[in-house]
Image (cartoon, rainbow, N blue to C red):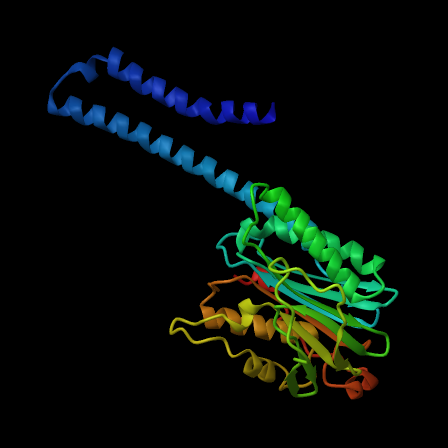
Length: 343
């Protein structure tokens, strides 16, 4: 009923304008004359009516576009909800940028939850980007939020995600198999800092320790989720330990594959090194610096969705080590504007 009434109201003014133009043409004596002045007046009348109709249609479309963006933003907030600033002793910072211009929703996903086994995080990238990948993101994230608490090990979580993705694809493409897959990185960080992971075709994370930036690549990843069945046994691989003040930087391949106007890839390791060069700093500061560098590199128009997440161990947000936490000094203010607000 609301939609019908809205459509009636939106059609009311154009109908009145059209009726006025027809009445003028049929009933006004001036409109029947063929002189130059009469033609000028008639042309002006129809020009005014046409301009009014165009402006009315434009205003209606802009109003609907703003409404759609509000709905998309609400959907993203409900699905890819803002992460808490701290989870069981880990400071958390994350950001996401959709490649599709004007879209608030992308094909990347991330989540962090505290469980009895430790803090578990997921970073994933759905094939494709924009609104078309929204359904797959919802299926994977919804499953992870339950499986992370229910399963004793990461292997069980990954098997649950595989089954959830398979169900989703069958529902979306009942006629046959779809060429759709998801790269996933599952990480578990225990209370003592020990990190384990399972990787399905996703970039390995970086560990930021002081001014050191090291990419952790302990083993070859499994194929992306959805391409091939996973093995029955999924032993986790160790990522070492996350010491006090160290950070784990997770990202999707949209970050390392971002290109500038000359086709050059974004130098992610060098950007991370520059981001941690000044002390003290916070997780949000590092995230802001990488976000700014990415947008500068791509001129604000990355070709693929980008998601970034930093998990920092310690009650203090500084990544420089325990010394800064002990002094109680606050990190200086940095550019911590979320990536989704920077475009």
